[in-house]
Image 1 (tube, helix red, strand yellow):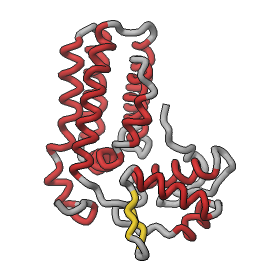
Image 2 (image 1 turned 90 degrees about the vertical axis):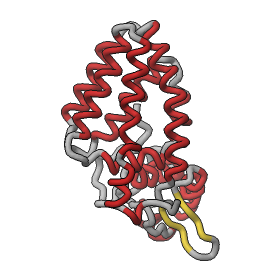
Image 3 (image 1 turned 90 degrees about the horizontal axis):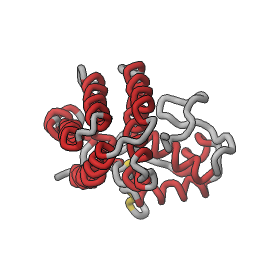
Length: 237
């Protein structure tokens, strides 16, 4: 379900790997750079040179320029005319807007699913939860987290909204990534996903909504601690 590039081949520490002809050069550059930014492999404030990125990715500067424009549209890249291009710092106002959007969509989504759980949903959710448990403490956990939510969008027959939500969630996703290393955080995410799944499968719409709200509330409760630890990662304000 993930829209991230295939990163099973060799990559450097910042998540960048040479172009392998699939998908198109433009999409490859965009997906690879976006993944590196959202995963914090390219941290907030990191400078972005078209020439250096093109050399690292094994593509010309044209797809890199197109990718940076798309990332600028998502507010993940900041361009200072005639000066510099760099990874945008985390903007809490944008993160809160993305949180509002996801809550609005996903509350209705889990309520709909609970009112009529689709056939075959139980084993699919169980497989996602098992995958997440196996990835606790590993780099792939965040992608498995996203895949769980994407599976709910698909089950609710609103899979087309997932790319839209993801495109507006870059600042929120980076904030969530900063929270993941906290002791017990990954275990808590799996437990919260389990509560959402259990309520849906039990036909408990109110319980599914309450579990989802609890799941989304934790990220913002830790902002002061995260911001104190990574002050350079955040935009002023």
